[in-house]
Image 1 (spheres, rainbow, N blue to C red):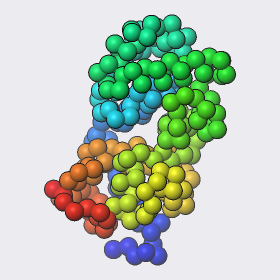
Image 2: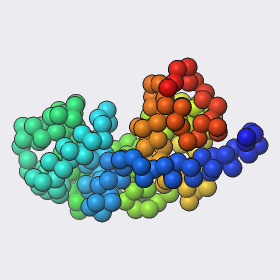
Image 3: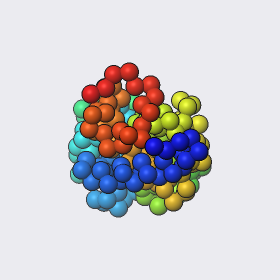
Length: 223
């Protein structure tokens, strides 16, 4: 068992184990669109649509949208009612359709319809916060970045990697814990683990491949 003085070693070991498990599961939606389209705009839009929705539904809705419009100019030309109808099943469809169109308008106006490659510029896009920006940097441009969502935060706390519960503090702590050449792997590996094993409620500890390394901080009930 690793002790506190070997936290970096423990973290790397856990990451390697989860990387081996990763191919068993469906890819996060951002990874799916990057792998299948190599199109940063499609990754951006699908990620803007993804909050509070299952990846399977986000993938379905994003595909439906891209069949009709897959460039900023084409999406901007869609009528409000048409865009809302396409994204209706994903939840919060009015807010999300508005954010998608605002993001497209911004890209057209300030970036010649191209997705920028810096955190500063990405976070200026309507609907894009630090998490989404870091996903784009890591997935599309191979730039070291750690995107912190609910899964990354929850698992990091359970494993004892971090104590703070704010995304920025978790991001900074993970950046200090892992070498930069591992950063871009963290989100997709932990998201897959969180969706399938280390679920927010009642994690499946009995089948977890990293059970022996986990102090299970904050876990009161599990399967």
